[in-house]
Length: 188
Image 1 (cartoon, rainbow, N blue to C red):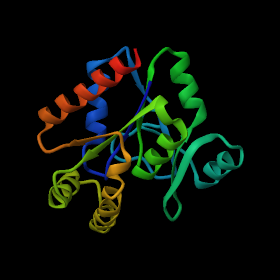
Image 2 (image 1 turned 90 degrees about the vertical axis):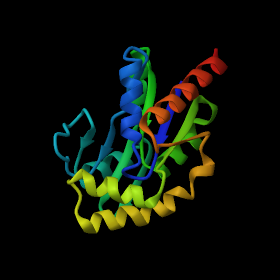
Image 3 (image 1 turned 135 degrees about the horizontal axis):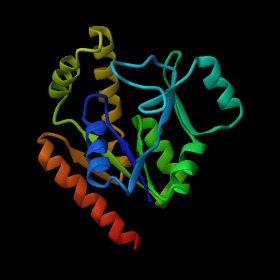
């Protein structure tokens, strides 16, 4: 079973994924994506992302190493390595993806019924702005870019199997737990 988590930046998808990894430590494993962006804060290569150069990313595209990839902004790539899915499945765990919205739509299209796609939605654009500003690691220019992108990403919400509105964290966790329990029951 594969779970695809997507959301506009600042909506809480990483928080939702961490909840599942904590609640089910032996069941799930996070697929580590590749990116050409620089690490933020305490991020570590191989834990949050594989941080690689644009040149290396483009070589991996040529070698067909990605199940999906996206150029999010000029010179900024994100992608999912095929070998990550294989690694996690060989370990006997279920794959969790924490990817951008277009990547999630692509993964769902490719994986079909093998995956449950979950869109984490902010309660409002104003709240999204407050969260992004509260991070303290994003420039005002990048916040404006992310908010503009969020408006577009919200239009993809109907393409997802499930939607969780992250207005109250405990309620969002409960919604997520129900989705996971139901999808596991359906696949048994």
